[in-house]
Structure formats: structure tokens, C-alpha cells
Length: 316
Image (cartoon, rainbow, N blue to C red):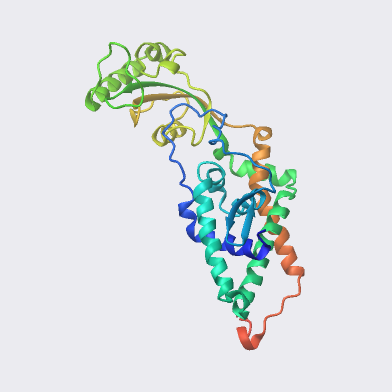
């Protein structure tokens, strides 16, 4: 089976080939807030953890060891490496193990330089694992959470808004049956006329129900579900979070067409709703404070003949 030394070599060398393992998908722009349901990755065959799934020469890799190696790569690649990218990942590992075996044949692993590097990399991995463990168990006190929340309330803002969409040719929004496909100039002219009507006192809900090309929100008088930062396409998001409640926006161009937006309310999510999110965000900071304390309490000596004398600050 694969020993710890070979797993370490594999972990280190796979990083140099990680670009072959998976690609980060580019999401299509979303107008409405995204669903909380995350689509499942493509299912991959499941085997017992102790089953050998890859053999390279004399090295045998079990399913559990393969999964342990995946755990060492950047988080954004792991889901793909366990599903659609499983075979490319295995091919990369095979390349690494072939080279590792050649290294053993050449007795590269017997050199003092290699042993020093290996020992440091082991300590490096252990340090990273220790930091993760400290982070996972870090306790963030209530005062720290509330202070951070008060300082960053704008990040937790959510908007309740209405909009009217006038689609353009090529829009990702479907054209209404029997409706003309408008050019960019025609759509802009129409949305500007609608804005004049609103500024003159026309009812936003009634106009949205009649004129908006977003069928889902038009049925509700242009009303959108409450959304937070980053849930809409960038131009829509920027416009909505810059508007004061009750103000009609200028025409906003997105891949869907031109929008008129009216924010009905904008306020931060209550503290209790974001508490868990705040804890996850602040745990690394609390963990770093623990690491700093450990470093201060440790006995650390630097040889002045090798590193030079400590630099002393000049008091002015």
C-alpha cells in the first residue's frame, strides 16, 4: 500500500499539475436570487475504502488514500476531483507515482537535502492541520461577534425591490408571445418612456404587471424576492444597493435588457440570522490569536552569527 512518505511526495507534486484536475465553472448571470438548493455533482461509483483503486508498479492506492489526497488540494477543486475530474486526478497521481518510484530507484530520497525537505514539509502539513483544528474549535465571544456585525452592517444588507424589464434582442429572458423583438435603441427608448410615466405618478405595480418582460415578477407587480449583495447580476446589484427607498432608477442595462428599479426597503439582516456566518468568518482570526500566543510562549532562538544581530529601533 501507499506509505506516508509516498503520499507526501504525491501531495507536493500534484500541486504543480493541479490545473489539469478541474476547471472552475463560470455561472450564468442570474436575475432573481439563486435557490438555496445546491445541485449535486455528477455521481461517481462508490467502492469500499480499503479497495485498491490505482496500482502504479509496486505502489497500491486505496479509495480511502485517494480521497485523503483529494483533501489536500484546494477546496474549490475537490468536488470535481471526486466526480467528473476523478479520472484526470488519478492520471495526475499516476504520473507523480511513476516519477516517485524513479526517484527511489535513483536513491534521491536517501540524500540529506531530500530528507531535510521532507521533514520540513511534514512539519508544514502538520502545522496546517493543527491550525485547521484550532480554527474548527475556536470560540468567538458574543461581544466580538456583535462588534464585527455593527462595523460591517452594510455587508449584510438585503433589499426588497420591484423592477420593470424591457428585453432586447439576444436577451436571456424569453420574448412574450406576439411581442416584437426590440433592438437595443428601441428597448432604451421604451424604458425611458416608462420611466417618464412613473415620475409623472403612474403606479409602479400596475405598469410592471402590464409592461415588464420578466413574467415571474410581473405577475407580482414587479416585486422581487428579498436579495442580498452578490445575488443579482453586477449592474443590477450595484444599482439596487445605491438607491434610496422609493426612488426610481435610471435605465439599468444587464444581459436581460433594460431595467427600472424601485427599492421598497433596504436594511441589514438581523444579528441572529447571520450569527453562524459571523462565527465562521471570525474563527480564523481567533485561531491566529491562539497561534500568536503559542509563538510568544515558545522558546525560539536565532543564531546571530547566521542571521545577524537583531535590529534595534532608534528612539527619537
